[in-house]
Image (cartoon, rainbow, N blue to C red; front, side, top):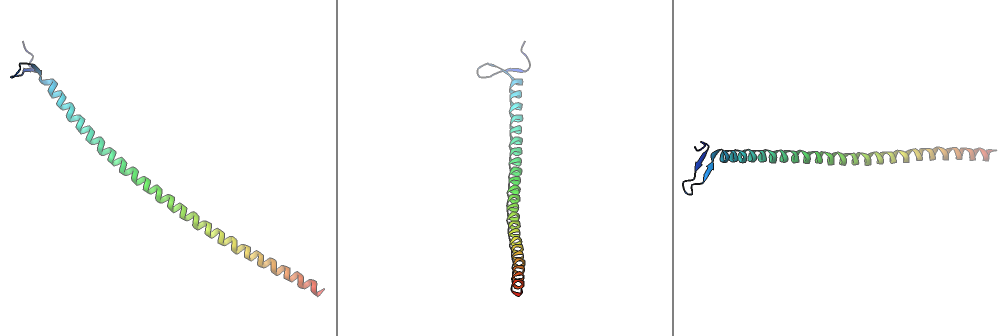
Length: 103
């Protein structure tokens, strides 16, 4: 008695398991869907990663610019303070010299 899930090939008479064929087709279909979803997810994460890298680069560039600006302001402030101290010191020295000449 032949199993109902098997048929014979009309050309060569070989017994073919229909459930095996259907299972293989379903397996291929599921595998293709999975590969498609996997490719979409990879694409999505690659795009997200690219966005994060761009944001990081932008942040680093902005940080560098702000550091340069801070450095410029600091140098300017130091020069101004140095000039003010030198001015006060010069005035004090001139005052002391004028007092020495008066004496």
